[in-house]
Length: 322
Image (cartoon, rainbow, N blue to C red; front, side, top):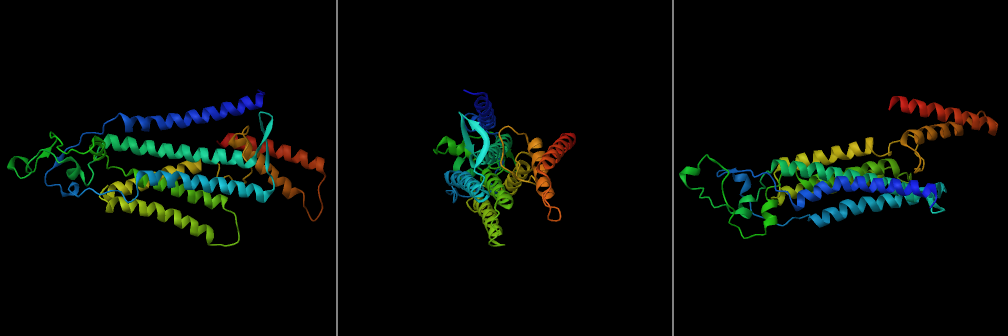
C-alpha cells in the first residue's frame, strides 16, 4: 500500500470515528437512558389531549430528511464536474485516480451527516434533561390519581404510577416533548439543503427555479413542524424551539464546518486544508485575470512565478487571520 493511499484511508477512518463519536451518545440515550421524571398538575389541560399517530412518521422523516439532500448533493456534484469538464482529481488511491465528484461528494455529504448527528445530539440531550410531558401524556399514562379528589387540587403531583398497558416505549416517549425532534431534524436538513442549493445550483436557465426549490425545502420543514402540533405530539413552544435549534445548527455547520461559501470554489483535495486550498484558489483566479491585459497574454513563466507568490501571500494571510 503506497503512502498516499495510507494517508487517505487514515483520514477517512478519522472522519468515520468522529461521526461515530457524535452518534453514539444519542444512541445510548435512546436505548438506555430515562428522561427526567417530571410531575404534573391535575388541572393542566395541555397534557390531556388524545393520542394520535404521527402524520410524518420517524421513518419517513429520516428517509426524506437524509435521503433527499444526499441524492441532490451527489447529483449536483456530478453535473458540476461534467459541466466543467474536469473529471479527475490529483488524488490517487491504490494507484487509481479518484474522480472529482467522488471527493466533492465525500466531503459535502460527510459534513452534512456530521451536522445532522450534532443536531440530533443537541436535541436529545435537551429532551432527556427536561423531560417535558407531551400533550397526550394522560391518554398514554393513565396515572393512578383521582384528580377529582380535594387533596390533589392545586397540587404538583410527582408520585404516581402509570396504569396503561401500552408499550413502555410509549410511556418513555410521552416524557420527551421538549424540544421537538421532528421539527429540529426537518429544519436542519431542509435549511442545509436550501443553503447548499444557493451555492452549488448554478444553472442560469431560470432566475426563479433555484428559489422555488429552496421554498420547497422550507415548506417541507414548516409543514412537518406544524403536523407535530396538530397530532398532539408537541406543544407549540416545543416546535418553535426545535425549529430554532435545527436552523441554528444548520447555519453553524455551513458557515464554520463546510467550505460551501468559499469565494472561489474549486474541487476539494484530500491533502489540502481549508486555508491552503482557499489561498491556491485565489491565486489561480488572479492568474486568469493576469492572462488577459488589453488583449496581450503575459509570459507563462512570469505567470507561474506570480501565481506562486500570490499563493504564498494568501496562504500566509489566511493563517494569520484564522
